[in-house]
Image (tube, rainbow over all chains, first blue to last red; front, top):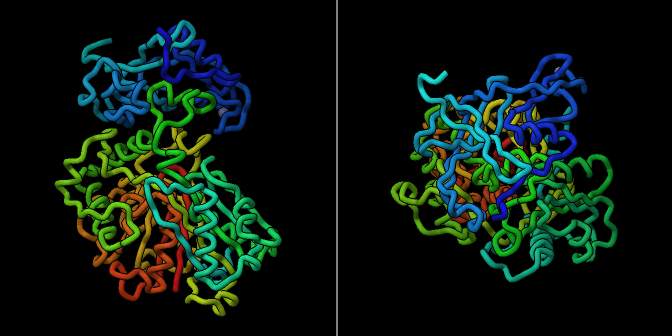
Length: 140
Length: 385
Ligand SMILES: [Zn+2]
């Protein structure tokens, strides 16, 4: 079955990130000059304007910063079987924020500050999407 | 250094009717609104030498409109790419152009078939290039979905409630009931609001603005000239455009915004009031960008009408009602009049200051605020009669 929903189109800035996702590793840029982590990937560190960068594997731990529950599907044909679904901004333990889906959780059970961890969802053979699920109490 | 207070005026205003299906081209809508603004001012198209608009790849170029109007010599033309954030910016562009000697008489317009043609509220680029690769693959696609994220942050941070959001919607509707141009004129109660279905939680249907076909235009010229024209001139006291750090790549990209519990308004407040030489307490009527209910709360807070986080209680206490201390969106706003991307707010502000607002007139309105923008950047004007 073909995957009809939007798929990321990696570019020279983001290729490393999406390649990491494909191997189920959440990779972030870390500025070699000032140590600031950044996401989305970009050519210049906005904090110190350095172009020197290392890619590091993030812990995959995050907290929910904000979230929405999509109930009306747009476009309908792509999302009518998905609703209700949760889109969230999560704050990674390393600092940056990501847009993602919260999965493995009742949409009405999402709360601010909830601890979540990355879990990769295969979209196609080339693309895995970094989603997040609640960290169960007592885990780790 | 702004030394232009009251030096420029809005001398004419014009609108088409607002509808769901105009049956007309965007070029027709734009030309009609511009001609209406010129007629209102008593200025011939022969005298126009500047034309400015903003678009979201859904409009017609300024020079195309000038061509329709038979403008003999265009000396200044700008098509600003932008969302509602640009609605007041284009008026400032007109002022800047005249001040710089690039033009004398400048038309500003926004025209769109926003319901029957290109629907901003629907999907956007599904190909997920650029910044979209970090958002769309998660089913985060539409503007209601984008801005619901901001609204939720405000609720998390400040305890803002559905009833407080609803107060913005029903206040707008109460005003629209009195506005013959408004697209939604059926009275709405809080129960009606709360009973409307969730589109993207926390947004119900009535938190979301209309989609509209239509156009609005204004004519900007020097105050000394405006005084000799047909209408009582409305003076531009001051204006500002901008936002905070980390605005991202486009309007949707707010991944790096400091905190979505506030928006652009706090970053332009000092600039705006400083230029205008007045403050929030001096405003008699405020047309505040309301693509969604929450954005009114954030702008009331950011511009200093109430303290940060107190927008919800402020509107719930009746402060923004037509007979309250700060009448807001007296035409019904984008929520109930029409969505002409914020430019209909400018038309309404001028109508109020002229005393031409009919049944919805705020008595003796002397100073008006118009704002445009809901997220990382925006613009605002302070006008006086
Ligand atoms: Zn750096």
